[in-house]
Each structure stands twice: as C-alpha cells, then as structure tokens.
Length: 317
Image (tube, one colour):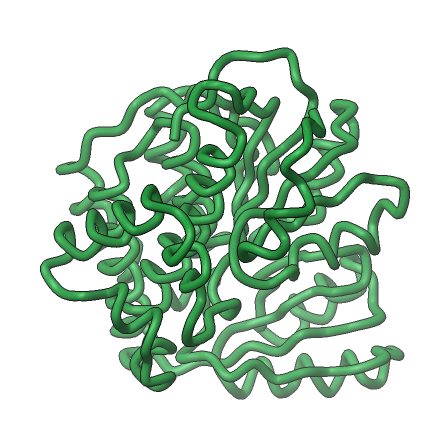
C-alpha cells in the first residue's frame, strides 16, 4: 500500500462512517488474494473476525460504531489493494494528495504509509468505542441542513448553542450538539429557508465539543502508536491544509474528534492545486456525489467493488 513516486496529478479520497453494508468487500475478497490477506491481517490485529461481520452481518452488529469504523477502513483499503493488484505491484503511481472524511482520514494515513494497517484498525475500533461512550455520557443529536450557506448556519449555531459538525458542500452542512440546541437550530434553519432538514440516526453529536472525553482517550492511545511522515500529503479535516509530518498527523487525529469536518474546504484546496481526477476508494459513492456538486468538470473514479474496479483498469493518471 505504498505507491511508487510519480508526478501524477490525482487524489485518493476515502469515505467515513455511514457507508457500511453487509457484504461489502465480498466480491473483491473472492477475486483478489491481496484482499483476503488484508481481511486476515485485520482480523488478527483485532483478535476477532471483523471480516465475518463485514461479509455476513448481522446488520445490527456491523452498524455498531466500534465495528463500523474498522469495517469501513478495511473495506476501503480492500479497494486500494485490489486496484494495486490489477495495475501490477509497483505500477500504481503515487497520488498528489489523499484525503478522508472523518474516519476516512485514518484510511488515507494507511494509504500514505503514515500508519500501519494493524494500528489503524485497532485505533478506529477504540475511536468508535470512545465516541459511543461520550455519546452516552452526554447525549446529543445531528441534523443535515440542505440549502443554506455556511455563514448562515454558523450564525444560527451561535444563537442556539449548536455547532457545525461538517461542511460537506456549499449547501450541505451538518449541525450537532446537545439535543435541545440542535432542535432550536433546526427550527431556525427552517425559518431561514433551508430546503430540507434530515435528522441523522447516529449515537451522538460527533465532531462537536460533546466528544471531548473521546479526545482524551484517543490522546492516550496515540501516544503508544508509531506514526511516520506521510509519503503523500494528507489534506486535513480540521484545517483543510496538507499534513506532511508525523507530528501534524498526531495533532490532527485529536483535533478532528471535536472540530468540524471541513470537507468542502479540503476539496476546494485540492481543486486550487490543479487536481482534476479524484479516485474514491471505499463503499458507496458519497464523496464523489458531493464533489460533483462542487465541481462538475472534474473526473471522478469511484471504486467500491469489482465491477467498478473493472472500469478503471486502463492507465487514467
């Protein structure tokens, strides 16, 4: 999972939680020995058969935060190792940048050689458990706001005590926080002309101050994990700026728990660097869909399964 150096101008994107489904990665595991080896590697690192939960469910087990996070990471890496196997070991050029939405940032770090597969799956499983515990300690909620700009939503959050959890596109913003605050903010968003409000079925208010206890737990865990300078710059969730050192990575993994995911800003950063080809690796096509809303002229190559992989085997870089 260490692409060779190249002057290729494309970026890897990795999805976050919510894209999981029972059976993800099955066709890739059936077709590629490298994917089967990856699944075994993750199972051994965790000490239980995560791959069986991914492939067989039940859905209730897969959607548990502490299972969903490592499962999505492994399913996304499966797309990458399958791509490498199709192209030929050593032939896949190094992307100019990589980025991952929330949990996906860990996947990007594995792809960039900053974090091992074993450490990544253990960390994101712990991350999921800590986020669940923080949610139980301080219950919260999240709502997707469609049709309002970021400045308007920021103003409403200041008035109500809610917080912006994620800025996905110009007009898709997620708010979170204490339940009453989010309810008040949602009402004001409706009054200000929001096209639609979509409550999220999540355990709590991720990427808000309600995750402070999870951040404390992750700080302790990250002190025990070796991190390396990324071989590919990672565009950070919290700052939308590139991470190039292990120290920056360590700080980002803490900040992103309570800070909003500035995905729109990260994508605009990549576009400003001249990136026109984006390869989304992982279940679903959520990131490709959001990017298409921001930049219709870009080339999108979502790789989620064996069928989609077959369409991108020719050199596209």
